[in-house]
Image (cartoon, rainbow, N blue to C red; front, side, top):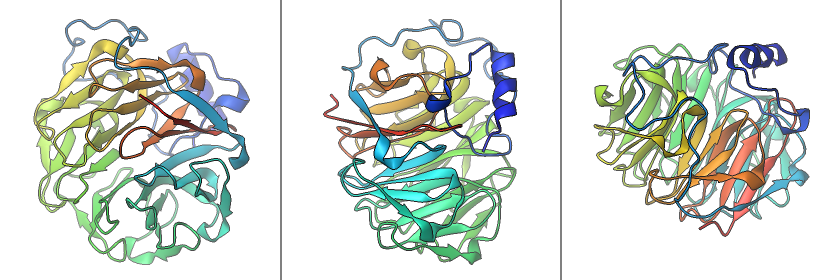
Length: 360
């Protein structure tokens, strides 16, 4: 979790005002957010048609959703959130707290104390919401096979500075990243893990997986996007992505459409499984962080640190600012398979889980 003092540093160097305490968020520890805004090393200039940092209005791309703060979950430093494919089941993790689950789309919540109170940096769900896996920054990978009611520490994962995760639709194929370490994969729902040293030891950001787990992507913060087309066995550095301050990456269920966020930059999209990338300047250059995709890759929801949520219904070409959600530190987002239901985690000090239904 980022400390209050780190937030002050970020505010000082970026010129962004700190949010009201009830509308902020937490961040994974150790280099998740640098004290000063990172600078993309490739290319040196912004994409054609780009505006300056904070520019861009985000017109088109569909309409706004109506977002609701789910206060029943409590005001906490929410870090991660994950939907089942139909959007009925939700799981969310707190930085320095428990995992909470909902079976009614986020209206009511249960504190799952068997998860233990930890700093949760990664959380993924199987399509039906029965299998969950969660990553702790100071512990193991933890798994549940009963929608979060009970949890098992997968000691074979080792105690590491775990970060983001990705899962196949059936929950068997898992990928997990570490801060200043390797990528790890599991093909048995987290019981055993293998390190993948090929991509190197890096500060890994977001990870994405196709529904069958064959195609995967991982974002190296202040590096490139890496992809795998053989279930994580081998990884390719996609130089077409450019070396940037990547934060999160998402993909369609078939693994062909990808979208990724850059902190202090733009949202980038790919339609060829990550080989080539296009800077989508429509939403502007911002401190982008979270992003998630619908199954077909047409609907996206992305979050800005100390900013707004944005929604696209045309695979990232145009974006609509979600003003009803307010200004927060949006560390994670999630969509139902069809994109009609959305959820977002806001924390850092104490805030809420936000949900939206009936989205265009």
